[in-house]
Amino acid sequence: SPMRAVILALALALVGSAVASRDDKAAYARSMVSSLDWGVMSTISTASDTAGAPFGNPQSHAEVDGNIYYYVSDVDQSMLDIAVNNQVGYTLSNAEALSSPACGSIPYAGDEESPLCSRLSITGNFVNISGTDEEEQATDALFKAHPAMKNWPADHSWFVGKLEITQLWEINMFGGASHITPDQYYAGTDGN
Image (cartoon, helix red, strand yellow):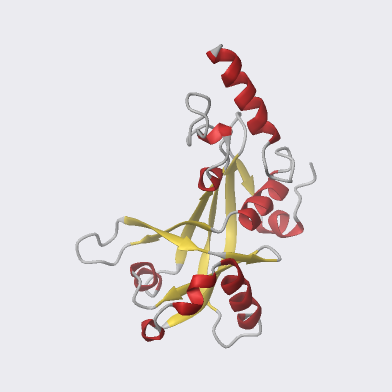
């Protein structure tokens, strides 16, 4: 029956592909950052036709020890915005994996907006780490996760950036959002 299919799909979603328990919100956030490789970066637009409005832009990332790195260009609108205000939001969703019944990979069983289709919004400050000790490790991780980046045009002023996390907001279950501190996130547990 259709209802049986829905229940089975939601049960499978709860088991999910993430390694971390849904109960330990910080561990689950770390597993999302390491298992997904792109998200939507939100800035405050500086473009003349949308100045002051929110602006979302897909960005690829790589993770090293919980740190989130990006290979970006000075000519990208998000980087133009960040040059004025480096506060950003970065949002990940398990819908990106295209494999979760909770996220709608089985019709009528789930939806991208379902609390079981986990989502994580990370707030922080974007910083250019060019010339720092962590640039080489970050670049290696980015090129390993996204091999096409090595072949992007050299004349676009590419650099490696990092999100210095100030707060995380997560929904991975019914019952409302969880607020995760950077200390909990980097420790990989909130104690649950």
